Picture 1 (cartoon, helix red, strand yellow):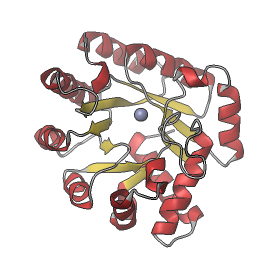
Picture 2: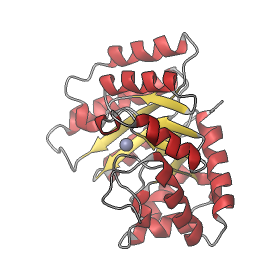
Picture 3: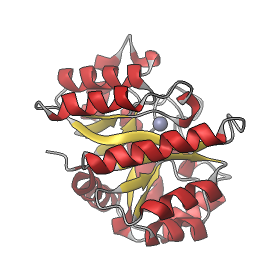
Picture 4: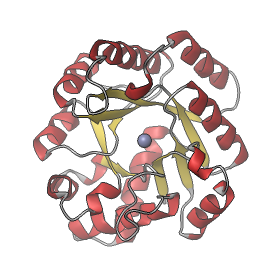
Length: 256
Ligand SMILES: [Zn+2]
């Protein structure tokens, strides 16, 4: 069982990361991708991937962190990683977020585009973050589609129409614990209807713990609760759902 998007590099895991990883293994987990949001968290993600056989990682600058964005610094991290046996598997999370900041839309866009270009240059897939910026995100994605090295919209929370638009552009979808929330009518509809080969599962921990853990610190093992919910929506066995989404993610991120 894979968790395709977690933040083991978040300070909330500093004291018990060993326990969190072993809980995951005990729950049937085998691989997780530790996703970055800035340069420091990119470096920390790499260190964690060196320590734990199950952990892969991404580098990237989140739209909330684009002040002082330095593409060269990021490119150097990618080059260094690719010059050795690293477990770098993606650029992310990158994108647009107008919920937290509407004042720097132009800067966010520049950083987003520059990072898509880096992903193309270094043959890596991108992990997209989009919050209250659906129109502009789509416009940028249209410029770069189809994504030869892959693109995934993480923590999907849009409509079914928007999801279908993304799928037409070759962008995959990924679900977090939000799909388990009672009032998440749209997300549930998407999880029920999109093709089985078009999506992955993730926790986005320490955030967005799924039911029945809602309100707690989220952790890798809880990806099982996301799987259970999506399997129920699609009226299929959890084990079959996990086998399918794992195989999707495995191929997408080229996990060894
Ligand atoms: Zn995240």
